[in-house]
Length: 262
Image (cartoon, rainbow, N blue to C red; front, top):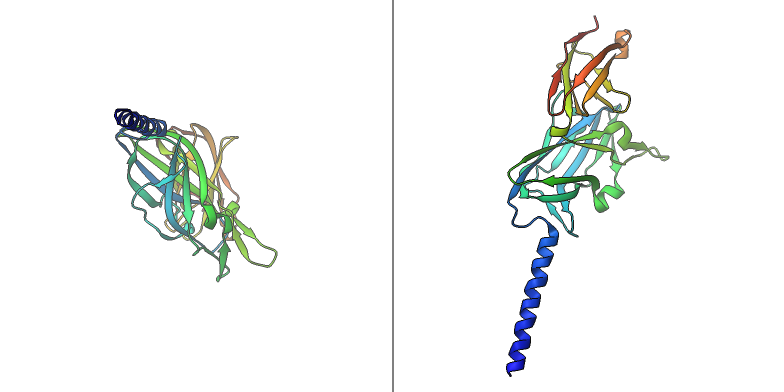
């Protein structure tokens, strides 16, 4: 009997040790919490509307096999073409355990569609529905630190015309940490005409359309000097305008003087 109790005691110690080791390997327990915000914006595409059904935003910690939802998700169907001129959709802004995360996954539902010349077409999204869109981040989330990520959904690269005349969605998204990247904002006149604004520094190219008020915002720009090109609506019949040497600083929004075509 004495040997039996001794064996049970040693087994209990072993189980406790194994449990603690697993928790230590996870790297995200007993370390407090960090705050993570994920926003969605749009890179341009030549469509009337693009509706994306966002159901969840999940993260995976290094050393863990399972993913966790960040928190309370603003799930819904978003028209990406409305996310211009500095407008963004906040998908989630919540606390989660501090630790080292390897990836973020944007989970899409089935209510995805595109409107072309007034006609709505469903967006076939087989891969997104099965496993979601995985974005590699490799970010250490420190306790009591606020992290803001911007997901720039490239509509033009994400929608593919199928041979049968339908459309499929192959999401192309650039994820940038606001603290590590800068932004460029400004306005274009006259109103009532949409303008394509492109920032190019030789290695990074980011574009956006102006909104109804003529405003634009370019996200996820690494530090450096950029050339800004403004391409007006073809109905204006005017050549592009270029501004050279626009400097961008990480974590800062650079405001550019208003550009006027007429």
